[in-house]
Image 1 (tube, rainbow, N blue to C red):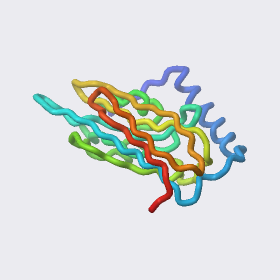
Image 2: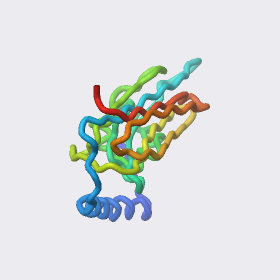
Image 3: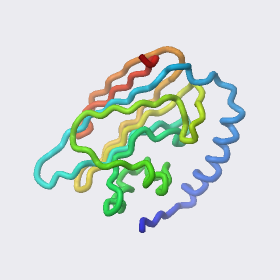
Image 4: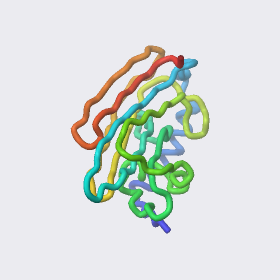
Amino acid sequence: MLKRYYSRRSFFRRVLGGALALGLSRAQAGKPWPQGFVLEVAFAYEGGGFRYRAPYVAAYVEDEKGNLVRTLALFLMPGKGERWWDALRRYYLLGDVAAMRALSGPTRPPGRYAVAWDGKDERGRTVTQGVYYVCVEYAREHGPYELFREKVELSDKPFQKAYTLKGELKEVVLDYRKKA
């Protein structure tokens, strides 16, 4: 059984922050997510060698305040690998272990992967246009930890940005466009 310890700070952040975010999201009068738009997040990582273990990877979106909006991908090893889930430091603090069990998929070998965000939050409600953080978190047992976190402005204007990284997480490409 995975034990979870909360500090006073994380407890108040979760409880009060969630309540405030819920209240503010209802009061927010921003423009809704543009019809037919999608944010594609593509990432590539490499690795290999003796005793190589496939990494745990989380791709997710945070709002401007750092609250989890949507989990796009979660490559974790359910079952015996749960004791290392907290290696995804940021996502583990934002997420919920029960939800992680439900969302997790098997770890994947090195390669290129792409996931898409349709502008909906974890509850299936459409979000508003505005500032969000796109995160790709990478951790490997007996290996490195990496966090890609980029601020993006999502409106009705498409864009494409590519980021070359220096660790095992080699590249992240953000492509915000109208669905084909």
